[in-house]
Length: 149
Image 1: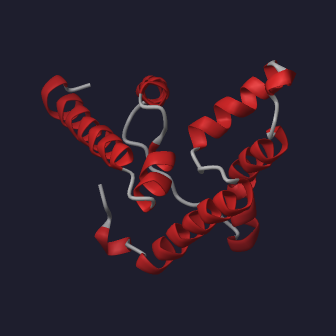
Image 2 (image 1 turned 135 degrees about the vertical axis):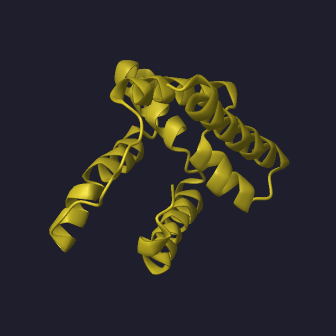
């Protein structure tokens, strides 16, 4: 649920702009699309199978940046960003596994299709974004209102 009383459009705009800038830099300098699931999968494969490790260093740097980002935020502001989860841990794990399965089936994740694909006017990415957004909306409605989990 969006807390409109505490909505901060300026920080949201800056955050979105930084994500877009990161995607543009990665594409400009590496010719790669910023898809977090693909980057993670490729990095894991490069660690497990070193022969497949081409580009492993930038992938690991990306993942380290994602992990230490909140620590940098805390150093700058003195507190971590507030996070509220309305689901129990078990539901979050199941949801994460389903998202991982979907990224494999859809040949990309929300960041790859939603940020980079839509920016390139990709019809395939538009179809993917519509599909995963609709699926998320329907699943959330069914679980919260019909199933009662």
